Length: 265
Ligand code: KIV
Ligand code: NA
Image (cartoon, rainbow, N blue to C red):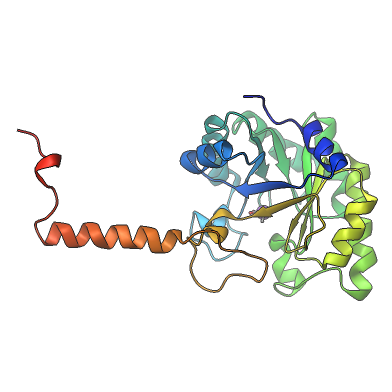
């Protein structure tokens, strides 16, 4: 199996071939998604909500994420593994950003890192890239700034259109290898995808980005409750797992499990 490398992502953009990206936080999901041909896996700080049970992405720490990253990188044969830098681990200074990115590469054995922020984080991106670490940008609605942004709001409408384009260009100039566009209008996503040489990865950004990313627990229906408009459900994992747990419970209570075929003599 040939490993996915950053130039391959750019080649797919040039050929006009959209590519998929999913989150993964552990061994089995990493193995399955890698074998399914997902070229890029993201160990997102969305582990905060989807693994650790926090209400937002803010509380999760570098120490909580690194073991998940290591588990994913150990479990893939081809996929490029991107590690998300969590809130507070890079905003303090350019030096802090480089030090945190180095930890994810060294201790997590990630292949690249991702951080949120536009032109104000271009110096951080540039410094990490100069340290030899590929960086994926992330702009539009950035969950680590949800309090500052006033909640989950679509970005890139009217007066913020140019600001989002400017952020994207600043990240490309700083050396980012790709940029996530989260919850932006399809109009601004299309413009950015056209203007940039590096791939754009959309989540709630419409059909015109170079790649699409979703959180696996959302798109496979493990997380219950109302999903955002941009999520499509491809499976009902919650139904499947809850059904299995209930069937097991009923069979234990009804003296049906274990049967003779599960029993040693
Ligand atoms: O943490 C995450 O899962 C992400 C993706 C939604 C892009 O940042
Ligand atoms: Na994230």
